[in-house]
Image 1 (cartoon, rainbow, N blue to C red):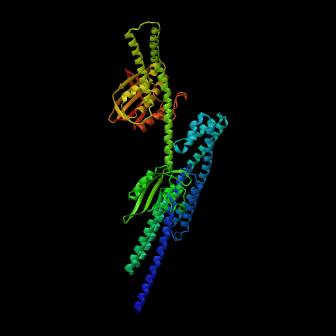
Image 2 (spheres, helix red, strand yellow):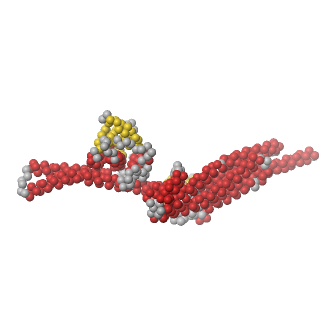
Image 3 (cartoon, rainbow, N blue to C red):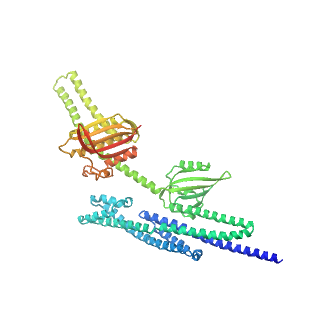
Length: 625
């Protein structure tokens, strides 16, 4: 009886000890799990702060950042007040936690400073744009472009730009010029401050401190869990297998909950928009990215259909095909043009997947990426490119009209002379011999045909279709030279040609424009060279992969300090009345983007008729058939 009582007491003691250890272990796990969640959230919030600092000029709502700062402080305080961490004897972990707290407080101070910087910068940006619209000295255009693209040009020497502004300031007395320079200086100074701020943040090594803190915490967690497992294992030996199974089940349940929590957190904090609807397409879940993008709250959107976002910019057939695809159990991918709550257009790349259980569709999951900014920027870039193309065409048109007028003077004179002569002989009663009359009429016809050919070449140059056609590069070059040759002859420019028959499939009108830009640039620089031979050498050939046209002059070459800038937009060495600085830029744009080729420039020395010459060589490569 005593043995039974002792055994019962021992069993009760063991069960009580097991209960105590289980309870203590569970408390520790819950506490450590909470700390793990705190650290995960802190890491995500810290990345949000870094994202804001990289894009602070484009980010409008500092209240969201302040809310995240408040959330960060709540998570940090939760770690500091965690009873398990307060009772541990790991001084290194406590020291690292304090170091991290000091560093992050410095970062918060920096965020508030950036907020004030941004307010000053936005004010100066608005003032500069207003001043620009009212009119400033044209010599400030380059400075204006630099100011408006500061965050897109990290290699720019800001201190050098400040020195330029200080140099300009006493020279310009007009009201708007002075205001423009004043606010330009403010913007650059605060941009320098922001760069210094980012440098100081880098020195704080917050990410490294967070990783170290996480590593120490995980190490402590592993040690704590290991110690608890040892104690529980001893009790497991004394207890029934059922308790072991129970603990195994409990452990797996914790891991599952942790994984589920991470997954939910990932979905909630994802930049991708997540929308879940039932089989009838009624919304039953949206994540935070949806509410940020559309402006609709969770309460407003639950039970609604996604069609509430329709903009009317896409045809009804688009939605019919979408519904047909997803209701057939297939995944759909495409892009939406939607309206947010405020009535603004938004662009989304989306995929919608039906969820099927027991052969039936039970819900639809849509994952969407907001591409509004990218789409708008792409549209703006396309409009800018079209404007540059039009400017380039207009500049070339003036050149072409001048060439045509130059070429037509002599043929028109011939037609006028021959026709006037025939009329006068008729009026004087002089009978023309039939062969002389035919000869004169043939001369008029030949001259008219020459004029017609010039018009056809001019029309080919300005045709607007972008369809690629098969053509001979040699013929295109000859056609281009025919349009501009009169000016070259008047300047005594000798053109030496080494031309092979090379066929390509590409944009013939754009090839003409590129060749004409290069020839005209060579002509303009040669015109400035007096008392020397003026020479242009043209080679057309093909190598293993490309059709090549090379055009070089003997004008001495491009200065080495600007040779890398000749393809930049609006860069020109000519007087503003002579050039716009978009010819070579558009030439490279057309060759690279439209024709999938390359256009390069280099200074070369070559021999021609046993004499040595130095000049610039432009080489255009186009893919062969």
